[in-house]
Image 1 (cartoon, rainbow, N blue to C red):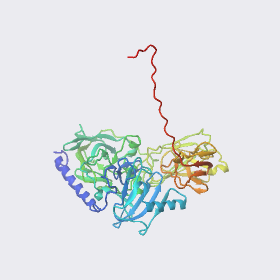
Image 2: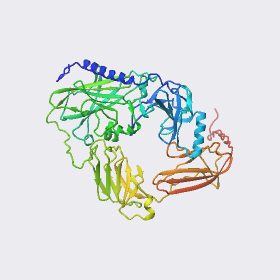
Image 3: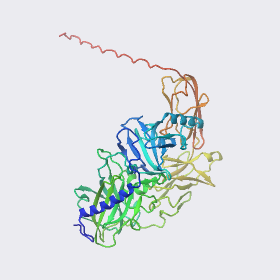
Length: 598
């Protein structure tokens, strides 16, 4: 029996709470049509990532379906509908298709190599018309209808993909909110419950950013997970919360995926939970409020807060008391139970006793009058630097730390200003203002950038009187620099007329102090389509745009402050047959003097 204010056997408690969670999970599943959407690949479905998996600055919003490390698998429409939108984006989705279905849902297919021929031809025409490789096109129901099982594309590795796979999403068409595809009965076997690794405990009388959480390892037993060698967890915290470190796996797979839900109980009463079932892209950055961000930025891994931070607004949390926190208002022992589940209703749990005890040292961080407070407008004003944070800018209380250093950089027009560091997340962009410390020449005024964190990001400011103002999505160091240097372009070869007959493509990787704003290429006076899939190099693969002969290639590159580089080359391109490989000479052995023949 568990001792304390409430007495119930551990097994009975787990059974009771499991029934509670499964009933709720089944209610969630009933919202979604089961088996309506088919596997978009005609190979057994295997996942490298699931919905809600933790990523830098966002949750993963769909399923990453394996393609056996290969490209160009046929991709099929998951249900009847019509192509509603296509996009070609550097990084991000690469090439992708969105199909609207008559039941109020849409499906998205991303990282594609090419669309089906009719659609591919239409998209190519629009790219040429707009003289842009990156493109977004909307369609009506009359344009490109598809039936369930029609081939719509070839799988690939385009955009922000790190290897061949198909990214697949199901969305609510009206709201465009991404839904967890595993709630729709996808053909995946999953009878493996999540693995619980560690707990982190926080003093919620102060900011989570101003403390080091107490880390508790978990051990699996026949009756659930336990905290080894701690029969009663004693604490000096009267108001506290927990975060969980856990992974989930599918049957037959060793790949660690994200968890679907976690809930915390005190003495059988639900306190708070998160459920990763529906996420809007506008909410996805709130992942930085759901994880211990400073712990993650230190390279230690992910902890997911089961109780929300004060500055969160996203829909994933559900609270069953006023604040979703554990309150210890007496010195009795209380039972804390945490259950973690996947989308297929497999649950793992841990249950332990907790007790408030006087005299246990706590963090004791004093509340400061100048702190940045979530939900408030916060302002920092210094001699040559100002910062303005909106109500939705931060998730928890932050003590502002500011430093000023004179700069010795030859192109600097301001001092180096530091406001905290990037281990504190920023949700809604804050505004910073810098006052130059030297007189800025009139011809320089449009050539100024603000560099954040030694080039980690370049901000294009606007002038507000004598001040430079810019939006930024992170804390860190800021300095205003003048950029008078145009972009640099690599050569395509040597000679007055470069021989590109052996080449299969032309690659440009321009470099610049402030960043590339635009890239434009012409072949014999006509726009030539270079792709920019991975957002670093511009690539042209020889095709019908370049017939055999001698051609003039002209490239124009502009950076974000308006510096321009224009270069031209003459090149020739003719049929090319590689020379046959050279025959290797047979090695001849030399006899040593005096050697006898046996």
